[in-house]
Each structure stands twice: as structure tokens, then as C-alpha cells.
Image (cartoon, rainbow, N blue to C red; front, side, top):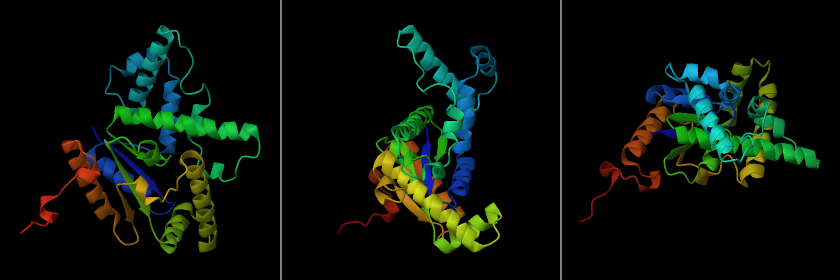
Amino acid sequence: MTVITIEGRLGAGGPDLGRIVAKELRLDFVDRLMLADIARRVGSTVGALADQERRVPSLANRFAQTIQKMLHRSAVAGMGGDPYFGPGIEQLLARPYSDMDDAPHTSAEEIDDRHFIDTAAKVINDLAEIGNVVLLGRGGAAILHDNPKVLRVGVVSKLEDRVKKVQGQSRLSTPEEAEKLIERADIAQHRYFERAFKSSPIDPFLYHFMWNTSDVSLEYAAQVTVDAAKVMSEKGLKWAELQFAQSTPTSE
């Protein structure tokens, strides 16, 4: 089973890296929009899910089936309640970091933020249990930090490179517009991590390694990430415990 989390700054290439790695390892790739799609599947009827089981299940369907089983066990045990806080989860999980760029001013806003953070953590933990997935963003590295089966990767790059990429992707007229968008995204992402995990999205201790895509190509970063994931999966060891014989000096 392989689980990889990728957390990156806007414009640093995290989504591209995640897709390359997922394709190479034949894993599911999950970003915030995919999370929203999965959440919609959770609301599927039992009959629809039974029909889906007759086909090769997608990640969304497998996840929905897992949640349906959880709900059934809860009902049988007399526990009741929806572990994902009821309807509207798809809108909740699709929220970008920028929706949280302002600190909450009221108790209701504080509860809403906590709702989002707790829901994202529950969903990410369950996806990690299903396995064979690359998880982009949502603080996956912090949420799954103590899971020894998860490879955690961070992605950064120089501001000028990020501006160029964001301007092209978002079709903005000027570099200044792209820089403002990046600044807002960085602040929002940092506040989310601070609020949710008392950490920073660029805290190196959250990750097994971080890529600076201004200095290395996405292809190189992806290949090393793939190799690391394969070794971790095969050996069942934490990255800190991995030893490469060819790079270990011999004692005299």
C-alpha cells in the first residue's frame, strides 16, 4: 500500500508533481476538487453503491463504500450520527485556503473553521486507510505525520518562478496581479496550518523531504519521489530508517 502527501506553495508545481507521481505509480490522485466529488459519492444510495461494486471501483466509489459501512456499523451499534457532519460536505471540502485568509471574528466563524478542519482530517485519514493514493494539500502531511506508511513531500520555488507560472495558468494580465494572488494564497495557507496544526506549510519537519522546483525539474523530483515511495512500500520502513548501501561510507 502506498500513500503520498504533497503540500506546495501556489505556483511551485505541487499539482503537477502529484499527477506525475500518481501516474507513474498507478495511484489515485486526490486534490480538493476530487475530495468534493468523493463527498458527493458518500451521499449515494446503497442500491447505487451495490451496482458500482459490480464494476472496478474508482477511488470515489471505494471511499463511499467505506463510509457506508461505517454508517451501517454505527447504526447497528446504536451510535447514530454522520461522521462527516451531514449535508454540504462537498462544498466544505472544496473550499480553497483563501476562504480562510481572515481570522474568525465570531463564535460561529470559529465553529465553521473547526468544522472544516475536523472534516478534512477525518476524510484524509480514511483515504490513507484505503491506500494507494497521492493526496494534494489540505495539510495531509500534518494530519498523517505519525503514520509510518505515508511519504510526506513538500514543494517550494522562488517567487519569480511562481509568478510566471501563476500568471500563465490563471491568464492574468500582469506579473503584479499574479504576485498579489500568490501573496494572498501564502497568507491563507499559513493561517490554515497555524490554526489547524500550530505549524507552517513550509516547516521542514513536516516532510521527509522538500523540493525546490526552481533548482530541480519536476521530472527529477517526481522520479526520486517515486523511488522513495517504492522503497518505503517494499520495506515497510520510515524514511528516516531507510539506508542506501551505495551512499553509506564503509568504516576502515
